Image (cartoon, rainbow, N blue to C red; front, side):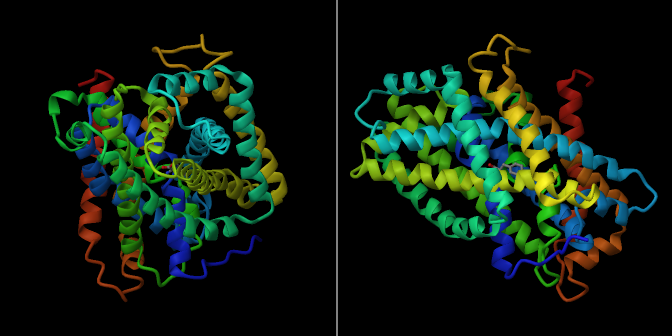
Length: 447
Ligand code: PFF
C-alpha cells in the first residue's frame, strides 16, 4: 500500500497546483495562439472560457481527487462502483504522453536559449538574425534532440530521487520572482516605439478576426494552461487536506494562471509590432521577440539569464505534474515500484519527445493537413485530449456523481458556505458540455 500524505500547508498544495498550471502554456503558447487567432477577441473568449469552464472543471477534478484520496482510476471506481467510467483514465494517460511529448521539445529550446544567454548571444543582433537563430536551432536534429533529452533526463532524475517537493519549494520562490520579472519586461516592452499597436491587438476585440477554429483554440488553450482534462489535478488534489477550501483554491489557481498568460501577452505584443515581427509566427514567436526586449534593457545579459532560468523551473514543475499522471497510475493500479513506474514512463516519453524533436528536420516531410508531427501533437493535446477529457469530467461531476459528494467537498462537510455550488452545477451540466459539443459538431461540419 502506498503511503499517502497531505501537503504540509495550504500554500504547499496551492503552490503545487499553480506550479503545474503556470508553465510554457502561459509564456510560450498563449502569445502564439493569441497571435495566430487575431488577438483581442480570442483573449475575450479565452477569459470567458476560464470562468465558465476552467474554474468549474478544476473544481471538479479537486472534488474527485480529495473525496477519494486516489488516482483517477481508483477514484472513479470508488465513486461509481460497478460502472465502467474508470476507462476514461486510459485517455488521460495517453493525453499526458502526448502533452509531454511536444512540451519537452519546447523545454529543450528553453535550455538552448538559456545556454545562448550564458554565452551572451542574445544581444547585438537584428530581428532577422534572431529569426535565423531559431531556424538554425530547429533545423539541427542533434541540437533539438540533445536539449530535449537533457531536459527529460533532468525531469526524471528529479522524480526518481523523490525531490519533487524540493523543486516545488524552489518553485514557490521562483514563481513570484517570475511574476515580478514579467512585470518589469512588460514595462520595458511598453516603452518601445509603436507599443500601443501591440496593446490594441491584445485588448481590442475585433470579432472579424476570430474564426470558429479560433474559438476551439481558445478552449483548448484554456484547458492546457490550467492543466485540466487529463486528471493531473485529480492526482494532486488527492493529497489535499480536508480543511482546504476547494472553491477558493480552484479560483486562485485560475486567476494566477490567467494573470501570467496576460502578462506574457503584454510583454510580447508591443515588441512584436515594434520589431516588425509577424504576430502569426506561431511556435517560434517568443523566441524571435524576447532577445530584442532583453537587448534594449540595461543589464540585458542578466535579465535574459534570469528569465530563461525562471521559465525553465516553471516548465519543470509542469512536466513533473504531467509525468506524475502515468507514474501514480502504474504504482497504484499495477503495483509497480516507483523506480519501475518511472522507467516505463520515461521510456515512452523519450520515444515520443524524440519524434517530436525530429519533426522540424529529419521528419519534416511527414505532414498531415499541413502540420508536422510536433504541430499535430500540440494541436491534439489541447484541442482533442484535454477538451474531451474536460467534457467527460464536466458531464461526470455535473450529471452522474452523487450531489452529496459535491456538497460535502465544497462545504467541507458543512463547515463552509459553499455559495459557488449552484454556479458550478449549472456550468458543468449545461455551459461546458453544450459549448464543447457545439464547437466539435460545427468544426466537423455536422451542424
Ligand atoms: N499547464 C501547463 C502549462 O501551462 O504550461 C501544461 C500542463 C501541465 C498541461 C500539466 C497538462 C498537465 F497535466
